[in-house]
Image 1 (cartoon, rainbow, N blue to C red):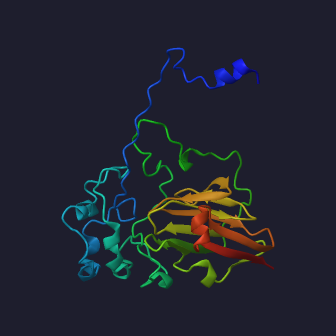
Image 2: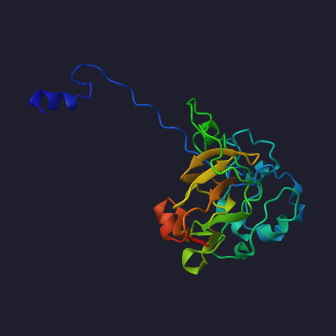
Image 3: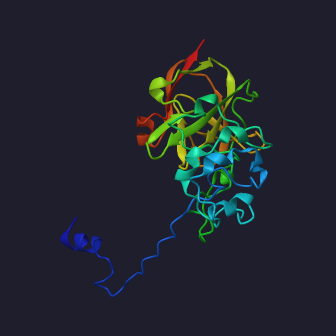
Length: 272
């Protein structure tokens, strides 16, 4: 590169009297009850042990639990002090209509600080901090496959896994069990199955199954698009189909590698 070219490559516009205004920062996003999988619960919380909620500030933050001030995107309801949720007895809520159930390994688990109770795929949701900002944000709902379901079979079974963690302890896991304590996930060679992921944390987790494709489903359980990695935002429940066509031992983990390192990792074994 000649000297004059190097000079032009460093030109910011000041030398030519051309200046560009810096765009303002977006407002700091706040997680709402809906973002945490608690939206639309209304006053159906009568079955819940409120005696354990003594640490929670009910003055304003609980106002959003009736869903009245939750817009379509769930952006303007009052933020909640997440630390106060640790004492909530979510097990009483599992039997309520429409409430998400949870595996026993999450109950009274010191490595699990919250559980989402009202979840949905939210495939058309831009995500926390990206809603209603005047810009077009592409979502999974915008993806259209150029081919039909490559396998064509309906899943023979469903494996449900919960993405769990404790933010203060920086512990991450599946079903409240970190990798070092977890048994492998066993798949039979050639089978077609469904994996359903429920995010019980306040962070988005991109989940990657090595060696096999992840065929994302829409809200009605139909094939939508083929992916390597599936993003699972807080308070969502997303399903995808897998054909176990690769024998061997495969990694299955969150692609935020510091989450993987701290336990959000499983071994998947495909055996005959």
